[in-house]
View 1 (tube, helix red, strand yellow):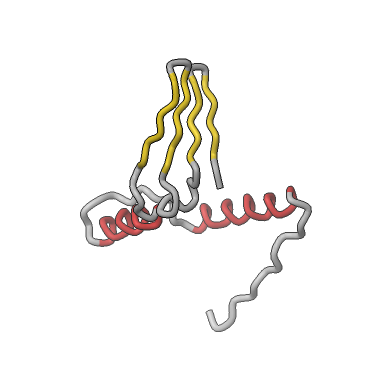
View 2: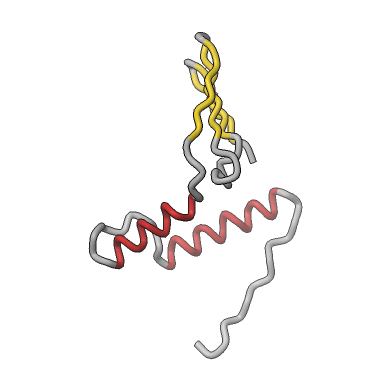
Length: 98
């Protein structure tokens, strides 16, 4: 999944921003030319996991929104994406034994 960002001085294309460990290239194009940068094949999940672990171990403040309000807002965005693609949102799951 690529992501192309266009600005007044050029553009940058991340070849696989969702799975950078599979393709970490970012192509930068400006009037001066084109260059390809490689940002490292580390999975993006590792950065999230390290931030969470640092917080749990008391080494860093939590910089990730991990509360219930954020989870509900995220699910609303996901449902909107489903609707925008012409699909019905996923069915709700009932919690049992909670």
